[in-house]
Amino acid sequence: ERARTNRMVWKKITILLPMYIWLAIVVPRPHKEERFLFPIYPMLCVGAAITIDEVLSEVLRLVDTWLQRTPNNAVAGKMRLKLILGMIILLPSALVSMSRAAALTANYASPLAMYEHLFYNVDVAPSSNSGASQTKKYVCTGGEWYRFPSSFHLPPNVELAFLKSSFSGQLPQPFTIHGSKEKSLAIQQGKFNDDNKEETDRYLTIEQCSYVVELIDTAKMDGEELRVPECIEYMNSDKTGQWKEVASYNFLDIDKTSALHRILYLPWGREKVFYKGYAMFERVDY
Figure 1 (tube, rainbow, N blue to C red):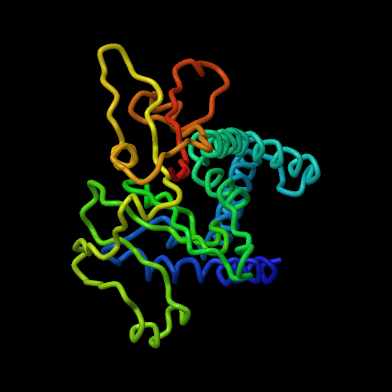
Figure 2 (tube, rainbow, N blue to C red):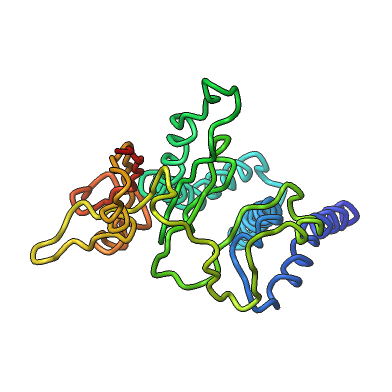
């Protein structure tokens, strides 16, 4: 029995050791993000399961000692009791997790829905007269650039571009045909710096954009004036074409919604939840 117990202990150590090695690498680093833990999520779940199992076993052992029962009495009953206690412990966590997942989907998924709409509704058919692909189109955004999911959400011949906004740091730019290989340095057109300073070669003018994505405040509180988003100002000043809204999805207004409704999805009190419009506009030439 002792040998079997030792084997189980070493097996658990072997399973969890990579997690502790990874934490030892990540934790001392000055810049930490939650995504750095992605490689050890499975081991975190296993570690949590082992912890709950060990704690419940110890609790039942203490109960046996208190009741002066031998550990082997009613093994099946003890396993059922352990299962019930485990469910009681995990059920609140499971409910909170499901509520959080529902909140993320209902309140913050509009960028994914927006770019999915763009992917399936942009006209990228070949030109009728030449058989060649149409001219490259740009979907432009200003302060909403950081919510762009990835270039995989863009159809062929469409690229993300940036309009000048209040953000004054360094913006990304597309990969070359060589991706992240060293050969890209020879043909990379945009400038880079290691101080996160603004590089103005990232920006287009509103006249170069085919689509614009912007977060629009659709409701105002008493006595409050609606702020005109930067991209709307650009579109209003465009003399070469008109702009029409072609899609809009709800995005939570974090300034007007209570913290509880921002964190969790609750079926009651929904009148206290406020949304902005995550909107896409399309150029209509004169």
